[in-house]
View (cartoon, rainbow, N blue to C red):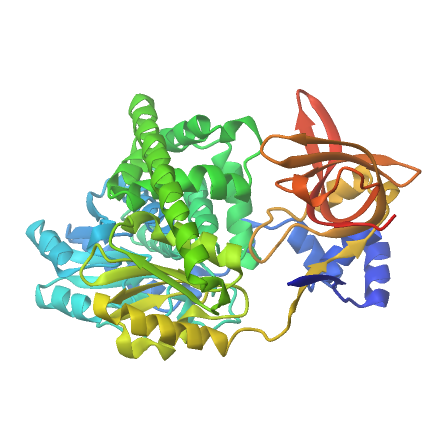
Length: 567
């Protein structure tokens, strides 16, 4: 597929006026205007987000009702149960609620499902809560589709407060309160919260009600200290880092760098993340995979114990176990990927619009990662199914422009169940229906696949090497944290002269580029094969960043795309 570099359009008059008004570099201003930030107030709020500007949590439907009921349970000394999930978002959300209740001396039961149980709460979990004497159940990152299970809990005398951010399907469960941002509509500032973020908003409201009713035992919990958990959940669940999420993550990253939680500190140290600035990338590639490994390999409670412990020695042991589990996960994943590569090569699956692969030997805990890598590699939706469960279960990942939920709806006649997001979903299916499902899914993706044979790669601005200054990079830093919905600014530099080059690490290309007036270092990860040895000039899409190493600080271009220029 041919790639076409395309600069994002913006109002040039507005751009120049904004640059003058805020005394910003026009390159920075172009990056801001292309993101829809067109007035001084919006830019200043973007540069300096503030927790005091968060929306009132009680704008979320049923939050006030839930807070009143929890306060009642505390007053009457009723047993409260919390039910989370086996991924980072669900684990951090459960840890957040448990930490809050522990700080106000309220003992709650914490429950997490194993991946073998399948997603969400089951009757056996409710039976266990009943045995423990629970009168009130609070779900985190699940529950919006648990219609039968919540009705069963009600039959047993357990009232339920659902906190979830997944899309509803059909009728709502018969719960006391259903706190889900989707009930607000896509335009609301709180619409894009993750599960842990929803739980955080509930606690903001609950703390207020407990204070007003005189039910706060001891010192009032400082919820800002728990934004490290919210940042982990938001980034790991790939939520847009815009608006409220960006504010929560910005302050959450600051809390991560000085966390009071021994478990988080141990995980940061053991993963090597503490040697550098903690960024969303640090969480995505170093911290979150270790937390997720517990749920993927069958013991999410290990991760919960890590996040909840107050003992530094225990924290290091828990973190070491998660690190070992993560290495085991990586080994299994690599083995499956090798077998899938052979399968794809032999079967011609590359010609299909949607990929479906299945095996009885694939580990349930890693099929989501495999599906993600296949979708990225082949630029099309992919579903990986393990037949080792009954029914068989699959994990799906999509690409931009194709909604998994819409595609799976076309295939619903052969599915036992499905659910998730437009980009990530899960399915349950009887083994004998997988072949039929494969054809239906391929057809569903084909009719949604963009017809163009070219892919547009958008960038924000064009510049020369000599335009990239210390002041510009410092302004770009004000746009952090970068992630989904707030990508790193992308700048095109054309016909740069390669003055130095060498291959480092595993196929990474380290360069010095110049324009005759200035030179800058550059790094292109995994792109060593894209630039022939005799190439003299290249054009790049890149992000200028600070490179700090051994006490030295200089500008380095992080290259995202390369085109070799003709001689």
